[in-house]
Length: 112
Image 1 (tube, rainbow, N blue to C red):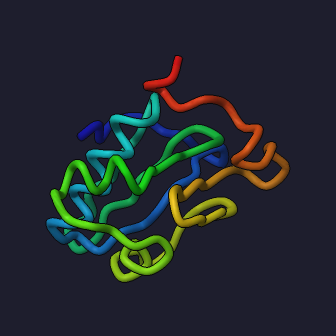
Image 2: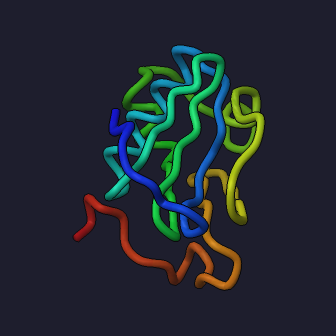
């Protein structure tokens, strides 16, 4: 979990209640994105990625070993977020306002 650095106004991503499921979310976000900053505030985890932050349902299912429902399961632990959220059955994508939509945004870290 990277806890150093500062993304300032360009950081986007979820704020999660600090639960085991949320830590799985953080792990998958770190795998699927580059330059992820995680601020562990005790009761919650603030996750920031520069400009675009992606989370795939498939990646989260692989990490937890359980079936995950989007929308639904993520929102239970997500108290807030930075940026604009686009949530589909397969992905959650946070992006800066004005960034291209998730369909045309930069590829995932693993897809490069």
